[in-house]
Image (tube, rainbow, N blue to C red; front, side):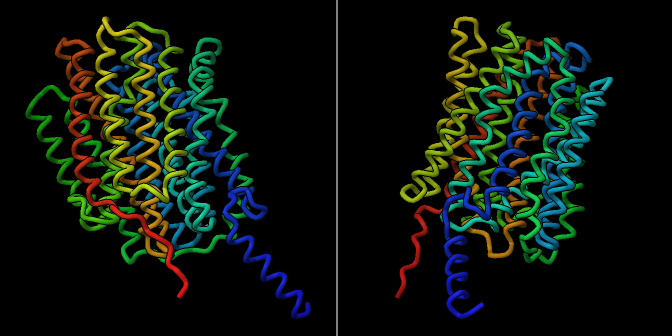
Length: 471
């Protein structure tokens, strides 16, 4: 090849690398593959939340309701840390493939589960796989797309929840009524692997990163953190005070030191920069999923609606979450990360008040759809902004470590939110109190979490990072 040909090739390579279109020729397979796998995970998440009242009616185990979410989320924590380490040490292809396999096997276990504990075991496998998938998606965005394309790709990832959000709850309800709730798990099992084939070529070309010196120890700490969190949730749900306090104290003794070692220094006090980003993400997800997991239960068991109607509330939140993500993408260059996240948290607090009001018969049922739609809008604004802030603050080559920390805080918060709610329901139900009272208490606790999130967001960047000018 002569000098002119080399120059043309170099110029084309530069154009490709600076192209801000996520569907450019070299990235279209990666983009579609990532979006499809996210869509399948989204469908399963929404489907389980929608049909779980039917599952409980079939298998029993209302006292384990929250564990169907917590088992998924706490094992997802372990999957996130392992995949982040492997992505930085060896590249993203192998942890992504392993995540797909574990997620699909978990679907099969859940689909054939003879009891609620067996279903929870399947959910735990899904969590391991889902953690790897979500972590590698962030790594792929950080390493596989130019700076200008990253906000758009983050918004597209949120948009991948749109179709499942629109049709998933309805399809899940119809499938549960026509073929049984098991079909919701079994039909999906082969699909993630097929979608992943599109992303494999691009992921295989992505280089390894620079693992942090203590990356391997993070895996052990993640297991300890998950175990400690499980003990805390178990203790909260036990009516015997002495046993409850013993389990909770043991869980805290395990979880807090492990959390300090897994998250960036200063996260527990929301120090400015990356620590505040991670802390705010954890509180955001704790609050949202601490209410979201029980919206179908509130509508079906308290207000007497159908499973399909309860699914509409999840649909509303999914659509508005995506709308909020696109608002963030279009305003990312004009509104500071701190202000955008606080907007999102304010919307979330408003939605909790509306959702609590729906528990009373005097509130019209359509208000539930509006209220939870407001929650989705708040999450779209705040969640996507925090992801972008993480990518901007991460050191080059350590996107895997940073994304693992962000996702770890996200799933830990979500798992604790759902788990605390489930424990409260079990505890109050065993004492003969009403489900309405338990749900109102949970909503109130999550409003306190929102207040903590607003305080933690003070450590986010208050000014936009402007591109450097050529001198």
